[in-house]
Structure formats: structure tokens, C-alpha cells
Image (tube, rainbow, N blue to C red):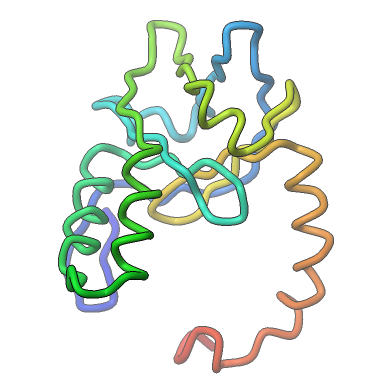
Length: 156
């Protein structure tokens, strides 16, 4: 079980690791075996930041959506984020071979080719075009090595 910083139990397993499945001709990807149990009740795909696709369990998506709903309607930035986040969302269910169809609008948004990289990002997974992931990783790896406490207070 995942426990948040306030000590509340949330969701199930944490999404970890890097996986390199391929996108088939029908726009489907086989879910990494390590992610299947958490996603067996269904999942939600939506636009992620940095042009990837966020993959949430249905329960985690509901939790995130509830947090977003708490933002004031008078905030233009919150309205914009909510519109883009939810208008790209798609509720999906893996088939018997653990494949999930990625809708065309999300494939286009993330610029997905055949080669994919699926990463664990804690409470969600992310689907990246492999070339885009490699470029992102190369650009950010040096910053990671020099991360200071100001980025995530209290971690180290």
C-alpha cells in the first residue's frame, strides 16, 4: 500500500521502473507486467506534461480529479488546466492479452511512434515516444544529480 506524507493510505502499488514495449499497428500497447495488478480495474489515459501520456488507475484518477476540482473557478489557469487535462482523458480497460488501446488524439499529442518507453512515476505511469524520452532524460539527468532540497523539501 502507498502511504502519503500525511500518513493516509492511498491506492495500491507504486509505479516503478522503465519498460520498452512497442505500439502495434492498431495503436495498442502491452502493459508492463509490474503495472497490471494496479490497473486491472481499469485505467485512465490523459495528456501529460512534457508531451507524454499519463496513465492512472481509475481510483488514482478520481483522487487527482477531486484535487483539481478544489481549484477556484475564478482561476483562469486552473480552468485551462482542467479543460486540457480532462478533454484528453480516456477511460480504458486492458484486453485479455493485457493490451490497451491508446486513442489517436493522445498518440498524436505525445508524438508516439512504434518504439515506446513506459516509466513508473509513483502514483502514475507515463507513456513516452522513446526518442522523446531519451532526449528528455539526457537533458534532465545532470539536473537530477545536482538536485537540492529546495526542489523537494525534506527528502534528503
